[in-house]
Length: 267
Image 1: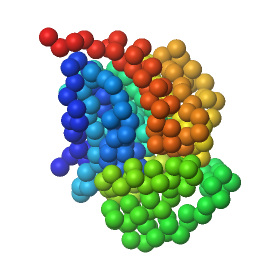
Image 2: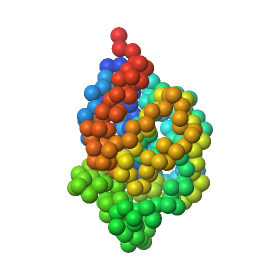
Image 3: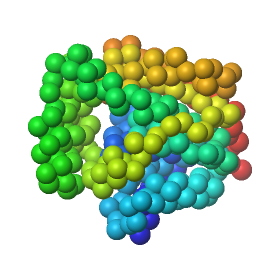
Image 4: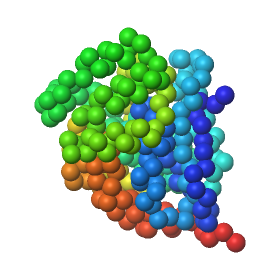
């Protein structure tokens, strides 16, 4: 069985595709549903979900990279929409030659943000998730991972949108193994290797306590003319939940100027 499950969500009328790759890692593409349902696009839309499979733990992410690369080669004009972990995963790769466009939502450029994370969360949320995290690691499973993720809602969403965040997470499937392996084999060495030369949109919530916009605003690597950045006011780590309209506007402007230039109507 493949590590990644690939689903057609909506068939388009142009030779171009949007592929939604969720973070977590271990969330299903359903976390993007509000954004997907609001998009006016002629592109085909696909979603990726993580499969729970037996695997060689030390090579898990190399195998995932291989699968993603092959997948992109089978899709016309693929434009990848990533969030948090999946944004970092893409940036950790050497190259993605088939990719025509890239959207990075709530990303980081290396693992340095992790060292500042505990103090930042304590400062801004006044919430201690230590016991919630401990409960997951005592008994890691898909069910306990869902409970863990939902228990940390104050970290992900602004206070007024915690209920909306829970509704979003209730729509998702949870796969715990990618998260476990990520903490062991990805985060400890993560750094950016891939500098996009293709049209790229970076979306960050200005109240994202986990991956604040400064991680990219201060990076000279991402100052090319092909890269645009949208900072969403009053939004957290899932900006399309806290501020759907602003996120949709940023995405749609990029869609009109970049994505449509890559598409040709089907004959």
